[in-house]
Image 1 (cartoon, rainbow, N blue to C red):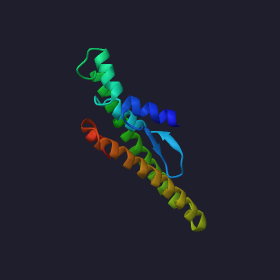
Image 2: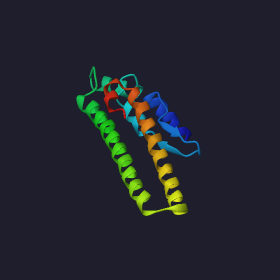
Image 3: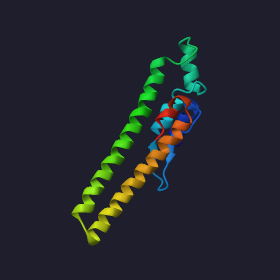
Length: 134
């Protein structure tokens, strides 16, 4: 883990791992996308110098925009799907079984709300993806 953090700091001047409360790690893919288009990050500066460029290629920025756009679409689609399934469950179950199902749905929606908040925090940090906030 130390090596990954070291490389991340050296290449992107940022720690691209996100620590969850339970101690598990995942690659912070939105932050990674964001810093890979940040001309202040060491590896991006080096890339520009090495290639005699003054700015990032449009394709790099378009790819980053598409990642944020598709991420937003996926979150909204999945939240809608959970709500549709929830409506069906409300009609099909009752009593303790319905309570159990509702708790499961609540846990799933909590995770999507966390994902939405994570998405929005990263959108705030890049002016050209603000429009993809949820």
